[in-house]
Each structure stands twice: as structure tokens, then as C-alpha cells.
Image (cartoon, rainbow, N blue to C red; front, side, top):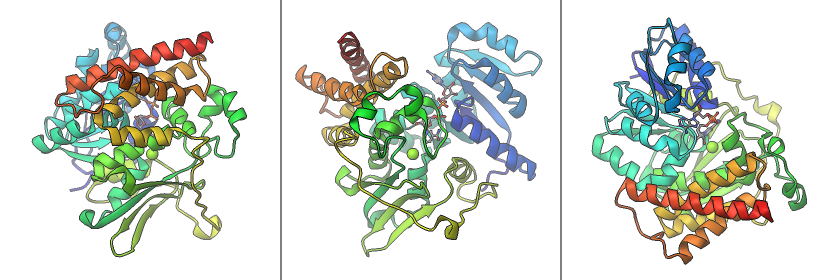
Length: 397
Ligand code: NAD
Ligand code: MG
């Protein structure tokens, strides 16, 4: 099986990953591949949604905001596409019979639609890491129960997925991190960092939320949790190394001392194309690596003082899945508060740490394993309320 003949849907089509997915589909179509598009979704960007619909010609398009149904119909007039609006329309989009679904909504908002694709046994290309961090064990169980296949899109996890020749013979994984825009900064510089500075990533061009997460290294912490769930390893068997060139996308260390890595230019079309054509590979016009031109690749340990987020994520993973859900929700709220100018850059990790301490002090069932998605949702809600309160007190201070 390859991408040719595979029907697809794209959740979050207007975002950075959504746009790269369109680029891959168009390139493969230009080579003659037949890739029909079933459904696409967007948050609130109707212009972007209409543009994607003109290019892809899906049968169904959904927008997350329920008040935008008429406006979405008007934006897509003449294209002969059924239109829906609101959270249930996002799930309807994912439930339609596409063989492959790109899950690229940002945040835990992507959980319900991703589950709708999992529950009909689809191939799910998973870019949305927040839904896995929030509900990992339950999502993996749903995938196993319904025969769905999760194909990791996050470049590190995609790299490990590509080199995992003997999953039961893995000793350790190493996730690489570019280090983000503040790799060589001081705490004083970080304390004054603006949203624009935090989003100016040196290697990757991405949505604003993941860009801020990359600057705090929370992104790497979320990825550590993601890797633990996807590959079934405890946090002590997952290392993080700073690799400023972003050429090696991660490493798998095996019991005989062999270390396998996947390399490539930092371009999300590579992992997206791999999941779309899996288990085959497709020809994609990404920049080829010039090894002699690179000259050297550097690796260094992350500074725990500058980047407390990694420690927080390791602690949440040790506590259990509900702590990871709380951490993710608190971080989403803290990042939104930072992007809105309500708290400082260093406050993001502080809010997350305080929310987890607050929930533990309140004797919230944080160390328990959730048995339903409702329990995850309740913890997510409690963490968001606590984060808003704590962020509010920092704003006032
Ligand atoms: P983005 O902000 O560029 O795009 C997000 C998409 O989700 C958009 O289509 C937006 O309209 C939609 N959306 C936003 N809020 C929504 C809501 N409440 N309900 C429904 N839809 C909503 O983000 P991105 O950079 O494309 O990242 C998407 C996901 O992929 C994130 O989880 C991110 O961590 C992950 N990811 C991204 C990259 C990257 O290079 N951009 C790499 C690895 C993983
Ligand atoms: Mg990544």
C-alpha cells in the first residue's frame, strides 16, 4: 500500500501542519497519485478553509466555531461541499470514511475528533501531541480495541518509528531538541521575552502555541510523555539532548549497543509524507542533506535551571496519566496568557508547577489512572481553572 488510492481527511487544515499536508498531497497528485479528500476542518479561519477547499475539493468541511455556520457556507459557496460547524461537526468530519486522517488541531481540543477517527479503525497520522499527553493510555486502548493505527508525525517520534527495527530490544531513546530561540539566553533575557521573540524559532516554522512550547522546552517535555506512551518506555529510559542543527531527529539505542537515528532537513513534509505513504515511501522534493556542507553536528545536555519544564514533565509522567492531563491543560492556559501579554515568559513553567502542586494539595485524584475520557476531561477542566486563577494573580502582582 502507498499513498496512491488512499482517501484522506485533514483535521486542522489551515495550520502549519495542515498546510504542509496539502503540499505533500499536491506533490503526490502531480506525480499521478489518486488521493481523494473526504473532509477538512479549521478552527475559525474561514478564508484559509475556503482556500484549502478550492485546492483539495473535499466532500465535507467543518469549522470549530458553531456561530460560523452561515459564514462558512458563504465562504464555500459554489464549491459543492457540505458544511458543518461546532465541535460535533469536527467529529463528523473525522468519522467520515477516509482511510488516513491527519490529526493536526492544536491542543486538547483535538482529542474528540481524533477519537472519532480512531473508533472507526483509521490510519491516524498524529501530529496533535496534546491529545496524547492528555489521554494517552485511554487513546492507545481505543486504538487497540478498534484496530486503528497511530502513525507519529512529530518529527522525533516519526524518526524513532522509522528506525524501530526491534521494538522489544530497545534499551533507551534519545529525543533531540533544537533548544529553541533561548538556548543560549540568560534568565534575565527570558524574563523580558516578548511573544514575538519566543515564537522566532531558529529552525522550524510552526504555529504559535508549539513555538512557545519549543522556547520553554515544554514541547520536549510533552514529547517525552508522548514517546513514553507511544513506545512503552518509562521516563528514565528516555533522554533529551540539545542538537542545535535539527538534522538528527532522534535516536533509538538497542541492547547490543547499536544506535539508530533518522536524519533529514528540518521540514515536516518528510514525516507527513512518511505517514501518508506508510509502509511505503514517496518521492518528495524536500531539501537534501549536504553532509560535507554541514561539517559538524553538535549535542549538549539541556540546562535544568533555564528549562524547568523538562523536570515538570518527567515528574508528571512518574505521577501518572491524570497528572500529565493536568500539566497539558495548565500549559495550554499559561501559553495563551503569555501570548495575550498577561504573564511573562518565565511565568509559564511557574503556572504549570503551581497548578500541579495546587491539585495535589487539594487531594485531586491526580495519581490515579483514569478509567474514562470524562475523568480526563474533569481533570483538564480543574487544571485550566487553577491555571487561570494563578495566572491572574501573577498579572495582578
Ligand atoms: P497551528 O496553530 O498552525 O494550526 C492549528 C490548527 O488547528 C488550525 O487549523 C486551527 O484552525 C485549528 N484549531 C485551533 N484551535 C482549534 C479548536 N479549538 N478546535 C478546532 N480546531 C482548532 O498549529 P500547528 O503548528 O500546525 O500544530 C498543530 C499540532 O501539531 C499541534 O498539536 C503541534 O504540537 C503539532 N506539531 C506541529 C509541528 C509543526 O511543525 N508545526 C511539529 C510537530 C507537532
Ligand atoms: Mg517535535
